[in-house]
Image (tube, rainbow, N blue to C red; front, side, top):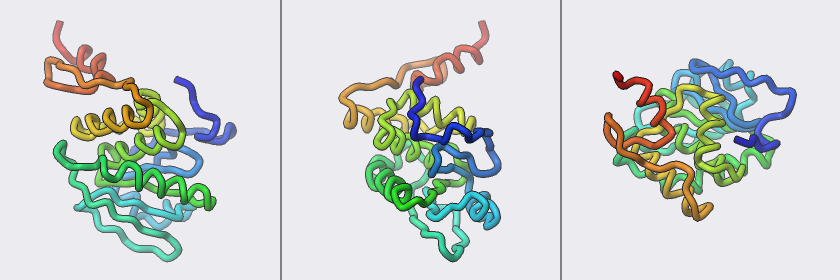
Length: 189
């Protein structure tokens, strides 16, 4: 995996966090709903835009922060694809204005992670495989649901005319091949 030079400044020390804000790029963070409503976390990380990718988390609105709502349930049948371009464009626009974006859903695992991967593909020219590896190194708990993986695979093909992740059959059902090794390790010999 090659890390694009624009993701994080060289001097930044990435410390994966699952309870606080996980920094993905110099201007993009992911968190759960609780952290997204923590004024101290938002201000200490200079967050200027909060994108709530949920139907169940209610944001506390703080002054000087722009709020965007993406009302999608964390279900494989939910259509997140329609938000890939507009949200990636919005994150990029905030970055161009020297702002910082926090993407969150309820747990910071599936919906916000999927939108993060779409952004990394579109604006950092990462393959889906590399975008996932990078985001997972920053936030180890990310795990988009299978429906979102299928939509991300479709989006990667739209952007690059090829796929680096595929849905495969496994002993636990259809999964993205990035989880194949993990599933094999869990199965009894």
